[in-house]
Length: 132
Length: 358
Length: 116
Image 1 (cartoon, rainbow over the protein chains, first blue to last red):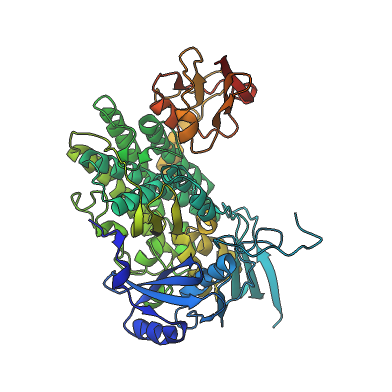
Image 2 (cartoon, each protein chain N blue to C red):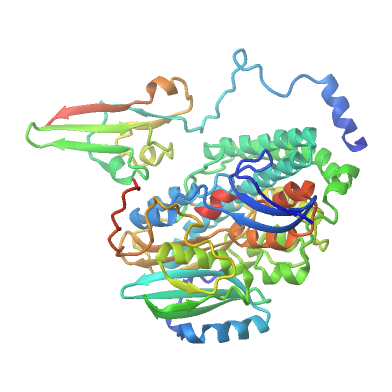
């Protein structure tokens, strides 16, 4: 049977500054990007990075960061991450910098749609004339 | 040389769904490509947080119309794993039967669309006619052709009983007969080979590092299939992943074609070995903690993550669909190809945009 | 295309693969789920169907002032999953195999009500 339950304590938790170094180490071992999951744990974000080793096992890496902190993009090391990073920036408002392809928060949402929809507490929308 | 940038899609005869490729061409040669998505985002992840957790099955099924059963299966296995529910063996076998049937109908649909993308209309019709047999089988066994709604947390809702089983076997035999006339056309036909061999090359190491999954990865020589991880009962059925080493559109087509043959065998084998017993177990508790599961969809590996807090609502449900990680492969495959090959190469990753945007 | 020639010859001499629709109609399978049928005589207004409906197509509305209870079924929202038909303790809901009358039957209807 596949192990479904995730043990939170077993994963390494790192800060955004140490992220690139860890990912480079993993990439040199032949790991590739699977996906990343953003959790809005008020008052901070937890981002789970999933990598796949050539043996097909999944490696998890957790990044804890404050909501206004900047997160470096890993798309320069593993290009496959670029769409997911754009999505997280769009849905949660995580400040991801140095994206390889930048959709400027308009990848899935439009100007008129709800901004940052997956945040637990959303900031009040600015009153603009257009919308609705 | 003058460069021209123009949009390919979102509405193009070859694309079953809306995706735009911004192609930059020099004469007839593509030099740059930028995929633009966002035409059919429906906010399913947000809706999943507002729904009761058993009702999310029906929501997850609607992420994609073609692989709906496998989406439901993935969600159910995830919640069952989080709640430590043991599913009855008969239900596991039935899940294999239905998920393989949906894999066959997804692949047959795709093979037809591929034939359509290089203008082989009669082959397209032939594929879709064969697919009709599978859709009828699904309607006969579950009640609906595309959205089956037959998976629940703790088991399945419908049974393939003794009256129905010979009918399913007859349908599979009829399908195998149809497949026998289609297989050699795809594998050997001169025009098909001319349009697919050597087109859209994705080298083995790049296929890995870009994160591609499913037939796109297996067509480049990696034996990576989530069915080997042992969800449902694939272990007992002696499943082996299909691998091709050609790295081009032809190899990806052959992976899917051989998977259809393999899936028919798996369905028959599952029907042979199916044990007697209950269909469901009663589930009373609520999901708690975190869970992560990988299952194999027709298009590749589907990753689902859920976080529960002991109530009837999930705190977060994340669905990573296979096309989401296959789209970056287009950035490697398309530059350098001729404009006339763009439809075939785009189709060769089997883009499912409804999945991608959720 | 020599590999398709067998098919071509077969198709030349066999009839059309499609059904001449208005004359020959496709029989639905006995398990098919097309339309939700409701029998108000058996209904006890327990509200189970309203609680479990994944699309919120069914609701039971209670008017405490006028002692009146009614069951509202919105067939536009219904996704034909048959979850309600399975769980109805009285058996007043069931799925019909035939989709006939789909267009005119699709209305938001106060299917039934009773005085309490």
